[in-house]
Image (cartoon, rainbow, N blue to C red):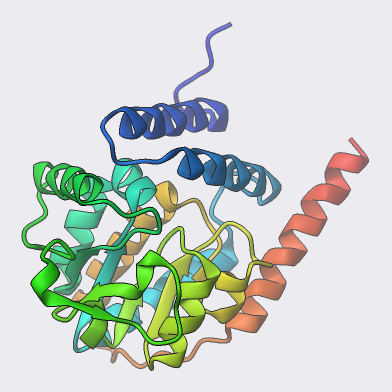
Length: 248
């Protein structure tokens, strides 16, 4: 039996295909495929849809991005493989820089990611030229190397599919951090200023729409957001879904 295209399972298979294609093109590493498998499990636990709690987080993220003086979108291989068009659209909408920043870094992989982003409509890509490299303090991984025109001077950084060490280091370095994380209990989720507990392939389109609405509105860009409450509600969603499954 063929699965309808609108069915969550069909969408999951399409996402997997994107990642596998990204792997063959040199964007994604094997570890990224493993990380996606963990994310799929949490997506199932949240019901494979964007919760009302996450819609509120997305609205807050839109205000924070549009209120920033120097917003930056940090891009790794999985993010580039899954959302290249959305990255370009969001950057244009909020006036953000795009910077390639990798845990498993190589010049070849950086160039492959930059080319994929440019094919999808992105303009200038930071993080490629060693002469602009600076280091985030108190971080040991390769992701400590950032662009002095981008993450190094950013006030707000969007870091989807993030590792916890860098989120902690960015916060200590004075940055506001927005993240997509399907696991509301992760260190990244708990450390960020705004955590969108949603699949990035759903959430990015919603974030772009939210940014466009905020730009058109006359209300201010002040952000008041309780991330602890946000995560608690997301964990409750998972518990409720597990309860329904256990009684099915």
